[in-house]
Image (cartoon, rainbow, N blue to C red; front, side, top):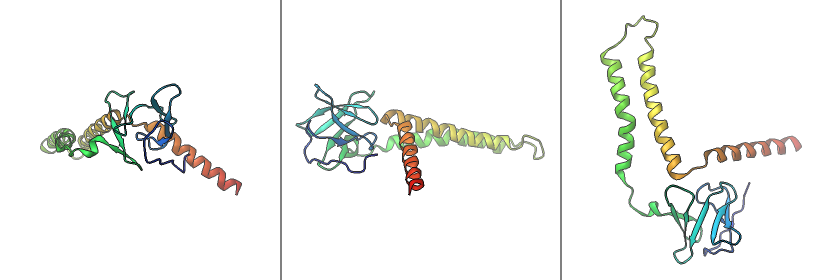
Length: 167
């Protein structure tokens, strides 16, 4: 686990920085290359030292971050938030759920039948499946290393347990 992070004020090839993708590892220069690599999530970045920016190159989308001297600033965070994506996501989750719920409400089953619970279970399942699709798209878009976070959490908990048993 990394507890102290270096914070040089200028982006250069001779320093290491925290990773803007996983926020857990450190990026440092790859040997004999003008590129950075994270020691935790293993993403590769190219640097533009004039603009103080790095771009991820092993992703489908070239995400770029600017170094402010203390932290990474995402290029999209500088731009205006696009409300259209939020409304599309809300519609993707709510419209199918409302259609299934309307069907369950307008055509109810007999109250004492053995599967009377099933239509409302189907409404919940529709909501959960559409929400999980959006969550998966979010993880894929940002190349978020979810499995590495679970491994880091497990290692952190194990190290705390070992420290408690030793003390």
